[in-house]
Image 1 (tube, rainbow, N blue to C red):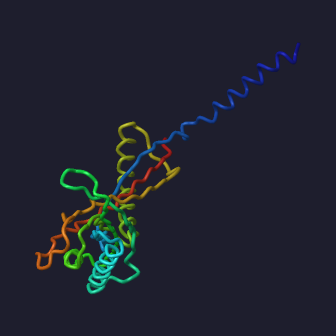
Image 2 (image 1 turned 180 degrees about the vertical axis):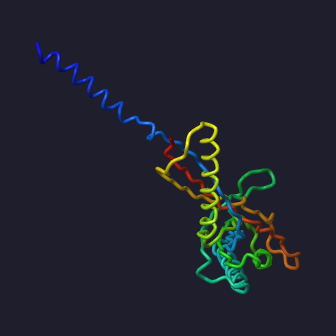
Image 3 (image 1 turned 30 degrees about the vertical axis):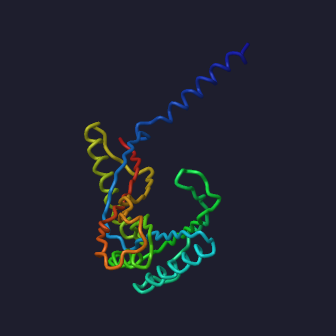
Length: 235
């Protein structure tokens, strides 16, 4: 009968040993702090589009090629390197023609669409790029996005602000809960950047606007935000 008595005794010992792990010094307080800093963008990318139409597909392509070449040359004149120009879309499509009564005539028109993505490393020249592209024949401009080549220094500054914010929050909560902050148990950081909405300059139709007024632009600033989660031991 003794073995049967030993079983509940051993179980009770295991429970008591597990409870002994939950000491007051193992209590923790978890807080999340955030910090941010603003910086001016030093890069901007924009997509320049050309659409041509002709009843002859070869002529439609040839016309598009000429305009695309003019736009690339216009970008070069304001300092854009060839490495910062990239064709992201090229399409040839057809559309049937209809007579005045809405009946198909059996003839078609051909459309050629070409989109060039340009990265400009001097944001102050964006108005020049937009206007010169329009003058060269671009009839579709979209996806203007500002960015920063290197955000490390901004992240470092925001991280220090986030840690200070977390420490302030922890001190406030510890005081309210009548506990004393101990050492930091774990620290986790997460950085992310909140960029402004893409800018759309409002040009989408037409075949070049020589002599038009320069396109106004506003690069604004970019906000880099860091969050830090800190786990403190408390007494």
